[in-house]
Length: 351
Image 1: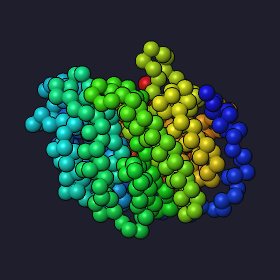
Image 2 (image 1 turned 180 degrees about the vertical axis):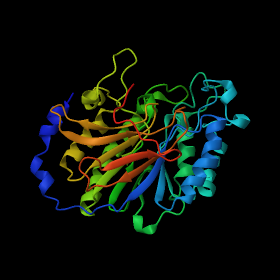
Image 3 (image 1 turned 90 degrees about the vertical axis):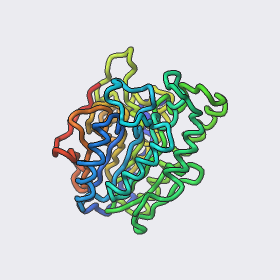
């Protein structure tokens, strides 16, 4: 398995000088959340306070939703906190309701990347009425990705990846954005209960190949447009330590990901591309509770990219991250605060 040191040596440092001065973002701000709503109070927060603040803030250009738009039936930690009506993330009705919330409440473009709760977990043994995970993926693509996000500006040059429409590219404010479809459950390779296992694994491999191509395309597009920064969003947290191992320190994050077969290709490609890119790079993800913003470095300590683990997953008090991008600030190109309370986010991720 490649180490982060080998990655750092793989791309000449002179590549940083070949692309010229990037265009700068001018106070670009966007909101991001995931792993929500898991409860009635979270649904009320999204439809009430969060929607009001997002719709009422002209400075928030759009929202990134990191998937896990609810919990499959049977996954609730406390039955008393279940969303009213008993709907779950594994039904068309629930997914359509979230899309309606974005349209009628947020009133901003919402760029979604799916989560495991939205499809790969829908066939789990503890789900009272399990359904095919591949059928749920087809449903997500039909509900959320058949057309571009509502009210997206034509100047943002939005486009979806052929064959994998949940992967998107768009640019605004001198920043290149992309979503890639990377979920928990070993990125769709674990817990395959109702579908043909060989088919599901082949489709997982195909998604990985598409994700790697899309990361490369995002950076190619960023260079062509002289973007000042690149932001890539996905659902899964690839840095989570194994439950039977001691938590890894920040300096070991990249090595941790490179040890995990399900996520290593994405981390490797992102590190290589970020090393060769002249501007700052941010990976945004959800899937774990420890909201944080920290720098991912190579084994020799060179910064490669930042990663934001957004609020969600029963984090209290409820909040949504607001990210401001300033590529001209070499020390803090990405500043994160809370939508509801203006909370600062921890600069070290703890597990």
